[in-house]
Image (cartoon, rainbow, N blue to C red; front, side, top):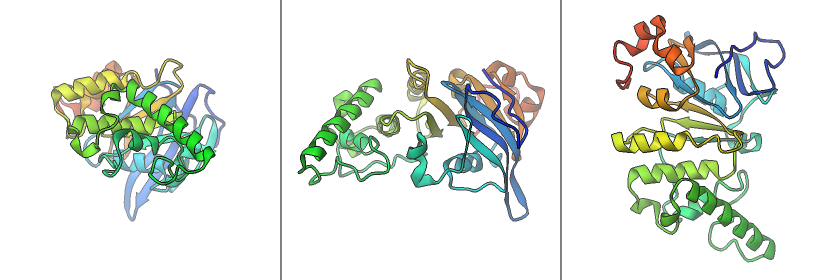
Length: 274
């Protein structure tokens, strides 16, 4: 499941596309970090972005999140041009996880997840903000949504625990639950396997395959250096090298692409490319 994006200035390629990255170019001084990068993320698909260190993966992620502005090119979300701003991402239906956990040690697991239930507003999960009837109702709704997200990720049994008491792999799933609780239309995952061991990565792979959900409405962009994980869970893969797309397509197509093998993968597709 993959597509070729349109040229800059034309209309959206297809109503089935959730995210379209159209000829995005980023320069830092005299260095071109991204050079006319284009690819698409269909609705309900998981698209992986891989490449050697310095290939432009982080810059691309930052453009989609609004941390970095492109010199040229554009982003389209469900066919509409968007200019993301980090603290306004939830308004666009975009959620993200970062390489770190970012969990609040003073809150329980379920309260941490509740902070993602109403993005852009002060959380009602914090103690002392529940005096009004309307706030009580919102708090109950948010708690129910948070528990549903925890159950989806098999975390209901740690809902009352402190994040500090959890194994790292479990805490990573809590951070993912917080991103999922608002039911985003686009989920951005930055190195979700970072710091995990082999068994934990296998468990993560099984979990990632469920993220589009039964309705298939959530789309996922996965930036990851564990190539075997990307090949196992993604519908399509985009390969960057020196800021350019050097290959894209289904995992099996990318695996056999001579340009990708020469630039990145080498003889062993299963090795980590850290």
